[in-house]
Length: 217
Image 1 (cartoon, rainbow, N blue to C red):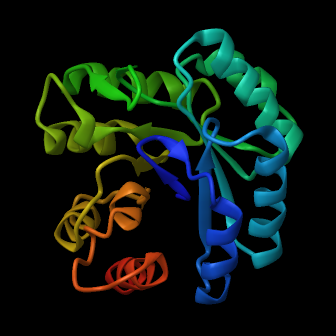
Image 2: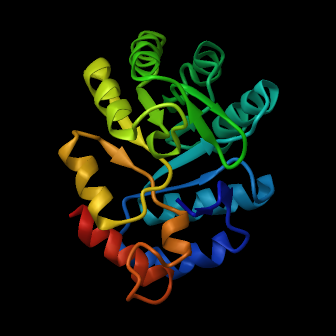
């Protein structure tokens, strides 16, 4: 994710140019941080690279989330992450080919924190997949009410055959490997790369990203 602290980075276009030769197959950004015209150009560069595109909604009000869902359709992203009104968002993306991965649990604030128990997460996962979502976006390591691993296990069990993306605070190779062991389908990494903490001995966003790609492989 070309994001830091739940915002698309202001120099996202320059970063995209810097990393375009690395062969990253999945790239995304938030609905906040840069204006729509920059989002549009960023998406064009992501598509030109051949990567699958992700647009994550972290706006705080229901109205803003739905506006962002409409913007995702207008932009032509491949996957829409975040938001909680699955029924309304499913209507917006219906027939567009955009895959929907709403937040499960009770996200709030910015940067987003996640409330909810494992039972809440499991229930939301079942409801969201039944409501035409391709899977869920789980902010497991932003949890305020439960152990992150318990939430991931509850989501994984409840989701089959839906896909599970764990987003937020994936900040080390150890955590990436733990997600693989738990059967997570995808993760997002942004802030840890831009802060240089994912691989502290490597300098610059491109080298941080190389480290993340090596770990994921």
